[in-house]
Image 1 (cartoon, rainbow, N blue to C red):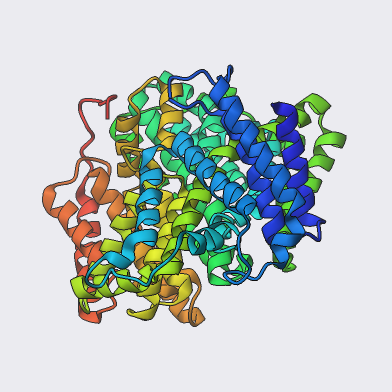
Image 2: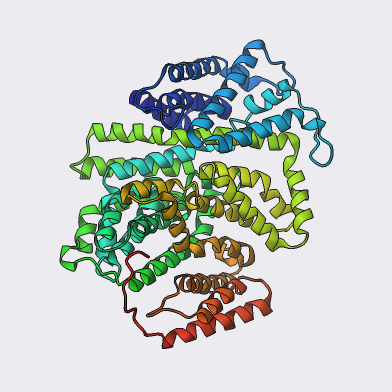
Length: 615
């Protein structure tokens, strides 16, 4: 299986960077190869052994391989077809519905019945929604029409989510995986330990910083938790942090990797595809908010550590920053290449390619740890790690195709306007809730893709927000849904290391990152944080949002050199929320409340008499 995984990876890199194939053709081949592998790696039930595929698994894998052969042969004919005009042959019907059903089963195996159920509902709505009465009624769609759009165009299964997975996302995941294999995780941990380990709550701060440094290049919260958390979580537990808290700190810090430039996460590439906004512009727009995310998490971790009387790491056992940089400076080279390629306006595909080439060069010529086996394992692991995302994105593509065919986005827009009226805040709350709910049953890229297809047109068309504001808002909540209970994949990875309840870890992580749930609303009312507007406006918005996240972090922890009283916490929390408002009076009242809350902190000096290790 690893051999086929490596073959799939090599094909994907070739198709994304050098192939002249039509985008539909290479996406079809990519999905067919991934499905062939998926059924051998993911059992039909959670209890099924993944190291020993069953006979049905081999049958489904064989059918996927048959689809690969068929679509490979018919590639040119499919590219030259006129959609809805050229009739579908019986063979096209068989293989078309075959790959559709295989994609459904792949989604069920990888993300469960949540997303699969949504797809089935949308399929039923597409085919029989013309029988409805009222606003949800749409025109008649035949089975042939449905199949033609869903399978033989780029508006269905092979739409933007899978296209992005087969290009930018795959290449960046390859970069992140090889970075970890080369020892990048240890380098960033060592650098973080050298810079923050000697301070109060040292191991927790090391976790935040190392996860941020590694996450900004890997873009995967789960990979971040596994790589840095395997070191930081046991160290935190050793110094008195409860398993729940140690895991939560790692999850909160790792989740931020999906919104931290330059790589961010796979959903960002789908956003660039949907909006037409360049990847470079999105990266720069996300910079301030990503920094503020980590500022808020870092502050809460610091206050929590002080509150529980956590110590620091032994300075004599910590590495020296100069030594870490001297030994690991080649890891900085790929980061420079990535950033330089972005600034020079290369496409995301080539940004990832050049970064990977730079990484391979430094790994081969500077590291004794390099081996062909490690490279082989890294390439295979990349493909295997993309299996679940690919299955989910294929299912999301079916839903998006159905939304396009039926005009459902316009109907949802009318419904949202009917519910919220001119109250844009209520609309934003509903949009955030919808995105988080979608994210509870599927990976971040699929959750964002569906939310963008359903809700973004309303935010842009009916409420006047820019494309960047609307999509960044939905992207953030799709990312945050990954650590929101009950389905929080990163929390399950941390739970395995910390030996704690994953739901409990996820809940604590949300509390540690509570300011992050407010940040997306600032995009809508303080667009300067997305680098939109004049320099004075950007500076003002960045400053007030900084005050907002700091106030929320302090209010959430309820501690500042001693416990805070209820009036102080309320003043900080309410004032921070009011400061987001575009209304000048509300903003002024909020500023006064926050100022009052911060002023009261000056008199708080009472240390806790009883240390709490279970916080």
